[in-house]
Length: 350
Image (cartoon, rainbow, N blue to C red):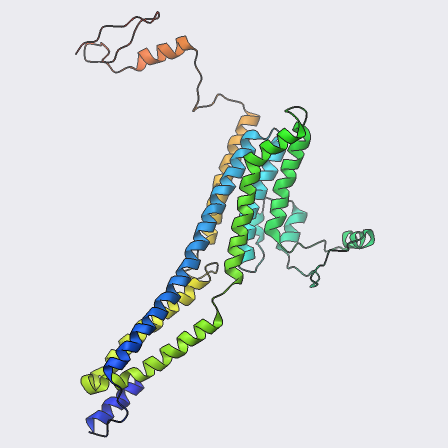
């Protein structure tokens, strides 16, 4: 705006026009700048949309893990262990992507008190590249004797280990009763193992987005080019618009800076801003869905009832149910063909 005012004032005093820039040259540069801005915004949105698809994958896979555990596992406590660990996986993934720790409210009732303290405490472990590569018995006993207990660093994989530990216990019990070890392991790999692998893949994809920002060199060159274009833009339009060039430059600058700001806001989709992914809402949805699955499993275990969806009937009972529910006309005669108990066709009235 200041440059536009200075250009308009100089033009109004009929001073020399050495500072003027041909408008067609500036329009040519505008085309190049538009391509850079469009590419920048497109790449930022691709990152945002890829993150949303990965969280959709997490939602679907957690439902599959919980449903398969609830249906195929034989022990109720193992069902609870696997399903609660799956819920914690979502909360821990959200916290890990934001470089924080999950809160006690998020994990309350899902893990033991000791585990809750270890998961919510700030990680203060060693910063070496391989902190546990040479953990011997004495170091283990020293950690056990520490009053503060061990604090875990990568919580999502801790929950993956909990899920797999529950499956391992189920395998140890079912091998022999339901077939050979190879058959049982392959069956559980198909039932739950692939979904757990899908969770880990989605976690890795989210971490790739989080830890790989847009190249700084590209962003720096784009912003330098945009700044030069905006500063010199009044010199190209002052001759034509005079004092109105101030308003024109202000509007054009606002649009370009806003487009660039949109790319900045959606480039990192795991934050807490209004344009970031609603991770809290997604995690709450996962928790509600999985606890509902767990409640149904507990109901089947603690109070066995006949399934309300698949109510098996004997052929005779099914025939009676069909005859009782067939549509009929005002005279009480069925519209659709039926028959007596021996299968003979009944009369049909048009």
